[in-house]
Amino acid sequence: MTTLLRASGSAEFLRLVPALAGFTPRESIVILPFRGSRSYGAMRLDLPDPDISLEEYADTAVGLVSRVDGTDAVAVVVYTDSEPHPTRDGLVLPFAVEVEELLGCAEDAGLRVVDALCVTPAGWSSYLVGDPEIGALADIVPVTEPRADGDVYEDQFAGTALPHADLAEKERVGQALADLTDILCRDKCGTLTGRENPLAIAALVMLEDVPAFFESVVHEPDDLPPFATAALLWCLDRPLFRDVAIAQWATDLTGGMRTLSAQLAFAGSGTSVPDDLGEVFLGRGRTPDLVRLRNALSVVRLAAARAPRTSRPAPLTAAAWLSWALGRSTHAGHYLALVREIDPEYGLAALLETMIGGAILPEWAFRRGPVE
Image 1 (cartoon, helix red, strand yellow):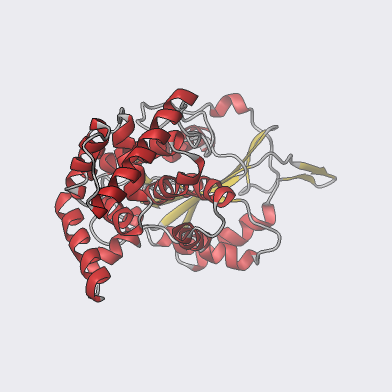
Image 2 (cartoon, rainbow, N blue to C red; image 1 turned 135 degrees about the horizontal axis):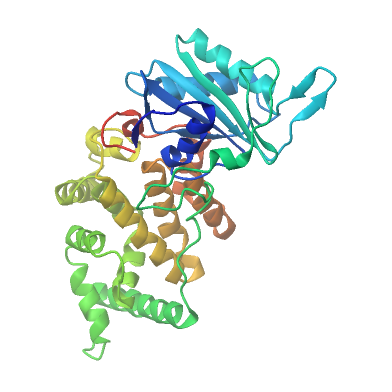
C-alpha cells in the first residue's frame, strides 16, 4: 500500500500506521520505509528476543527496510503491552534501548529518521523527545480504509483461523478422498469394475489435466465440492503436484504446465529444473498477481479445514507459502505451527520455517508500485 503522508503530527501519523500495515500490531516493532514524504507499506517484526544480539536484530531490520527501492528515510513504531516506567528523571519508555540501537543503525545506513513512537496500554509517546509525555489513545484511533483482507482494528494474527467446517463436510471430504485414492490405485492396476462412484470418476477425469484443474480452483475459490476438494488434497499431498500448484498460482497456467513438464523430466531422468521455475519458490522473479495468490490461499485454507487430520499438512504448508508470498510471515508461521503439531518431520514445512526464521522475504515485497 502506498500512502502520501499528510500527517500534521505524530498522533496523526499513528492513526495512519494500521492502515499502512493492514492491521493494528501487538507486541511488535513496525518499520515504515519512506521516500521523501511517501510511505510504502510497513514491515512488522516481533519485539527483540533477549537471547538474540540487539546489534544483529537492528542490522537485520535496517537491512530489510533498506531493500525497498528508493528508501531514504524510516519511521519506527513500537506496539507493546509493557507500561512506561516512571523515574525521578521522568518517564522511561519501553524498549528505549532497543529503539536507540535501531535508529543508530538506520542513521549509519544513511537513512533519515522521520519519527520514533511508542504505543502502550497507557497511551502513546515519542522516543525523540528528552522528557516524554503520554498522549491519549483516543488521539490515535486508526484511519479505516476498505480492505480485501481484514479489519485494521484487528492484530497481526487476525485471519489465521481456518474457515469453519462442520462434521458432515469433513466426513464427505474424507469419504471422497478415500474413494478417489482407491479408484486411482485400481485405475493404475487396470482393475476398475464399472461400479465405482460416478463422482470419483468425474474427479479422476479432472486429474487428467492437473494444470487445468489447478487453474479452475483458483478462479472459483469459494465453494469446492467434496470430490474437487478431495482431488486437490490428493494432489497437494504429492510433492511433484504440490510444487506445480505453488508455481502455477504464483505465475499462470503456462507456468504450471512448464513446471509439470520439468518435474516429470526430473523424476524420470534427473533433468535439472530450469532456474526461473525454481526461483519462484524462493520469491524471485516477476511479481505475482496478488488477487490470484489470495484466491489460492482461500482454496487451500478451505481444503485444510475440511481435510482429515493426516491430510492437513500439505494444504497448510501451501497456505504458509502463499501467506509468505503475500508478505504475511506471521500467518505463515501460524500455519507451519499447525503442521508441526501433526507431522514434525514434514519436509517443506521445515524449509519454510528456516526461510521465515532467517527473515527472508520475497524479492517482490521490496518493489514499489502496486505490490502491498
